[in-house]
Length: 219
Image 1: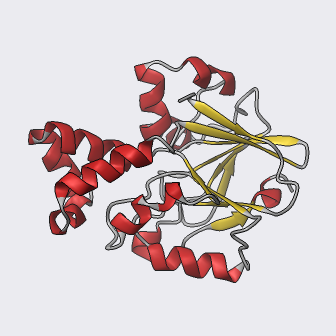
Image 2: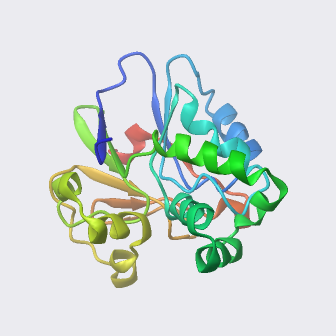
């Protein structure tokens, strides 16, 4: 799988971007209904963290198999993978970060489903909207978007775990892309830093899932 999966403009429907879902399956469906999401022609892009902290994590782990859903991998998908394959400290770390839902499921089935889902969850997506390019990663983009193509372990870590930009309130635009949409760091309301749009409004805590039309990102 390429690290960046690219998407041409949607010529028949609309594109939406949704924040970290964290097992809030019903809330996602409600948010989609509010915008009259049409599964036959609209597309939903997600910034990752489909699982953990919410009761319906297993349902959310099946979202990547839907033809209208296009996610990226988040740190919680990677936490789960390490825990299921290594156990020990990785298992403990997953549990304290919301992985306890898996204790009620068949672990072998969860592992199988996660491995299958990750085949549909690249590190980044790039989608054309109104002739411009929107990049989507879970946590943080490198300073130049094109660097993702050749990302090594350190860059991949930044993509799914990074918070340095928002900690510094860094407004220098990411080059090589018109806008970048990220989640990972919970904020009170969607916030711009340069050309990076932070949209994780903490659905599992607040009940507020951010779902926006991609055109609004470029407005």
